[in-house]
Image: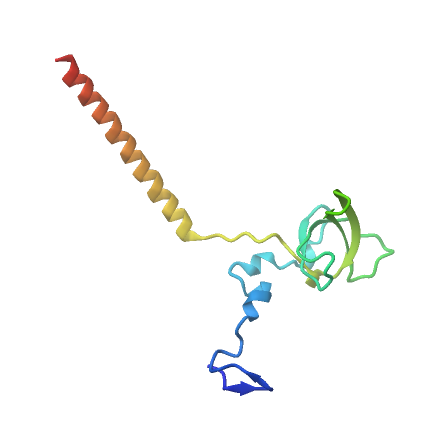
Length: 143
C-alpha cells in the first residue's frame, strides 16, 4: 500500500500505482506477443500505432517497403483513418520507430476453450436426449 500522501498527491492508503495498467499496454496479458522486433519489420505486416500522436493513436496500418531515404531506425507505415466530417477514409504515411508499433492484440484464454468444449458436450447430450424422446414418442404412438 502507498503512503497517505506522496509527492504532494494523497493516495488515501491505496497502491501508488493505481491506474497505471489502464494506460500501459505492455502490462496486459499476452503483451509479449504484441511487441514488434526488427525481424518483424517486413513489408505488408499489419501493426497498430501506440505512439504519442493523438491523430494516429490506436490506428492500424501496414508497413511499407523501407527505402534508403528514411532514417535507419524509422519505418514507414501507411495508416488509414476515417474522417467523420468528410465521411471518407484517409491514408497517410507515417514514419515510426518500432517502439511506437504493436501487433494487434490476440488474447488467448485457456479457460474460454474449456468452457466452449463443455458447452458443446452439453448441447450434444441435449440433442441425444431429444432424439431419444422423439423415438420413444413414435414407438408409443405406433402401439
